[in-house]
Length: 100
Figure 1 (cartoon, rainbow, N blue to C red):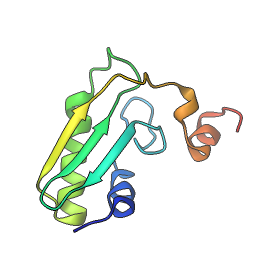
Figure 2: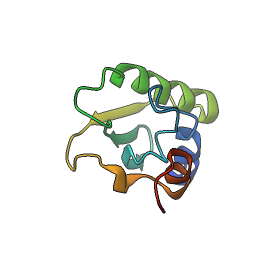
Figure 3: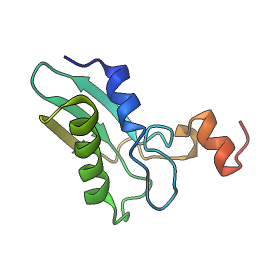
């Protein structure tokens, strides 16, 4: 069984195509539950109108399969709490030019 840190490290390879920063540092991953047979991931997008949900979901499945041989992934796209700039990691803030 994989642990949460391994899964998050793998998810850092998923880049938001519009912003160019990984989804972990953007703060889009709200929950990771590395279950015995299925990994549960709760995530959001930067806005409800974002057209990239399918691309990001496919990338999540791909990196988990390729990096950790995880094929059982359950994802839930949520809107609460709504994403905002406070969710950015320090690395993402620096890259985007926001104060730390």
